[in-house]
Amino acid sequence: MKNNILIHGNNIYGLKYLIEKEHLAGKVDLVYIDPPFATGGDFTISEGRTSTISNSKNGTLAYSDKLVGVEFIEFLRDRLVLIRELLSDNGSIYLHIDYKIGHYVKVMMDEVFGIENFRNDITRIKCNPKNFQRVGYGNIKDLILFYTKGNNPIWNEPKTEYTAEDIKKLFPKCDKDGKRYTTVPIHAPGETKNGSSNQQFKGMYPPPGRHWRTDVKTLEEWDKNGLIEWSANGNPRKIIYFEDREGKRVQDIWEFKDPQYPNYPTEKNEDMLNLIVKTSSNVNSIVLDCFCGSGTTLVAAHKNNRKWIGIDQSKYAIEATQKKLDNIETTLFYDRPKFDIIEL
Image 1 (cartoon, helix red, strand yellow):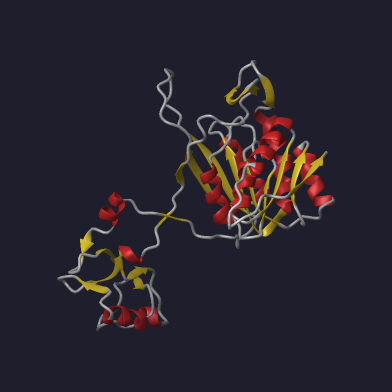
Image 2: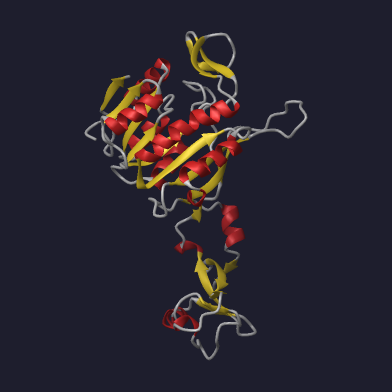
């Protein structure tokens, strides 16, 4: 793919175009999509006030979300089958959806991508708590379904910084120099009969039904370097220093709130898309969003030096995407994006 691509048209035709004309089957490493949520409403842009978004009858129609139930599921299935064909063997898809319909979508995605390739149901905190009166708990979340095409996906382990509270809680001990640390067992469940993970270390074997987490030579090196802490009753544990940790592992609850004054309906948080792009693609990977809306996925892909493809049938979405791409400030790390616009 020579240039980035922005397609204005129905995405079913756009996906087929990518397969048949651009010959991109098996070449896309990452797909993020934020399709309509089967709300049954219309989303509009108020004239002269592009930051005012609603699902009322007032303003210019940005897109319609009238498909519900089985019809909506089949609408998505048709597109996901084509997306799977476009994905590389190392590819991943993140599908952002509402909690009311998301679990039905998951069952369908299990069929398309294989239940063995389901990775996460990510809870995304989307807003501050609301105090609407209704029978039921307040809704502050939606969900992202994460699947891979196979068992060897691109995965750049994401880390997040420890807070001061995290440090005190997770590294509760201090050494003589004041460095914070914690300890973890040096043995793990499962007994092994052969190999160095079941040999003697300092005159002891692993407890019954367990094995050493590493070979005895490494255990001895840890002990020599002062990285084994011995309890009063002679139980060895590995010392883990806070300063040696790059950060804590990202979990499956994300707090990424969307723009308070969006330029386009349901515009998503750019930091969230940055996390997805960095984690599940590499430099020069192709990133696809076939419900691209205002183009946040494409901006995140460009800023992280990925190639990208966006598709949307709304002319307002294409205009919003072009504007967002044009407003990217050039830096030492990336130039202004170049892309071809295709009308279908």
